[in-house]
Structures are given as C-alpha cells and as structure tokens.
Image (cartoon, rainbow, N blue to C red; front, side, top):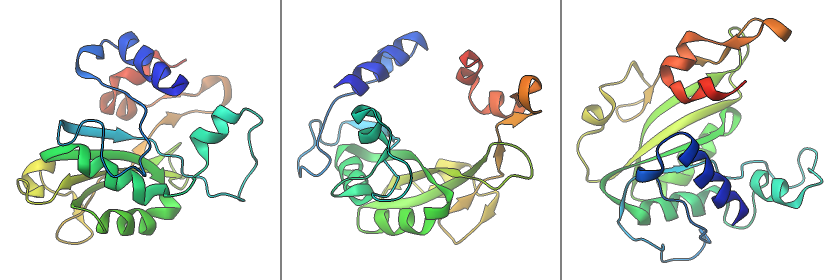
Length: 189
C-alpha cells in the first residue's frame, strides 16, 4: 500500500492523476481487480533474483527489488488479464535477463513488440531495457510501434538505445535524448 500511495502522489505531481490508476494486487491471484479494463499497463516488477546481491535493510525496499514466488511470469499473466484487446504492457527489466523476459510473456496472450536498451551513458552497456508487449489478436504490431528500427524477428522491434546522461560528477546532466523521450525526467535533480 505504501508503494501504491507513492505512485499516486507521483502521478498527481506530474499532472497525470486523472488518467492513472494504481492499486495493490497479488499478481499470483487468477482474477485481476479490473479485468479487461486497461489500455496500458505499466510495471517495474521486482527483478533482482533471491540470493543475488545485497539486501536493503528496509523491508519495503527489499520487497520492491527482489522477486518472490511467481516472479515475472505472474506479472505478465496479471497484466494480460487486466488489459483490453489492443492493450499494451510496458515494463522495465534487466538487460541481462531479456531471454527470461521474452519467455515469460510467451506463456500468455502477449506478443512482444519492442525493446529499448537503456544506457546510463554512451559506451556503457545497457543495464535495463524498457519492453513493450501488445495483447495478441490486436492491431498489427507494426501499426502499434510505427515499425521497427531494426528487427530481431518479425514481431520484435529493437529500438535505438536510449542514453540517459552525459558528463560525469558535478557536470553530469540528462541528455536531450532522455528529455525528449520523457520530459517528466526534468523534475529529477
């Protein structure tokens, strides 16, 4: 509930509260709280694997970061159940685990559409990807995405990498590319 309230406060601060809904839900439950209601579902699921990496002392932060039972598969199934036909599902996930991401959505009615590698800086490997899937039997993925920039296969567009920062230390700042991609980033110091 605390994370949902934080999301609501952020939506209000960013001026999108009128088109934003956040709620608690156990993604392992078969029935979503709002079946087939959403045209866009976004998730930043816990994606650190149990037993790998340092555990945060704060239990809320630990719950937000580390996978539990069901993991990514449960998030994909819950998103698909909550989406309308032609709905889209976007999420953030580690770049090193893209194969798992594609496998998780394969067991659902979701069709992988796009992957956007996110790099902290130029010449630094992407640590995360933004991924988008559409509900199967929807309009063509090519129409949804505007067409791939380079195609991994006939259904997945690999977008040009997004570089977030330029400069280092006190001179570091968000790139024009990052701000063009998401103007809301400008509110970050």
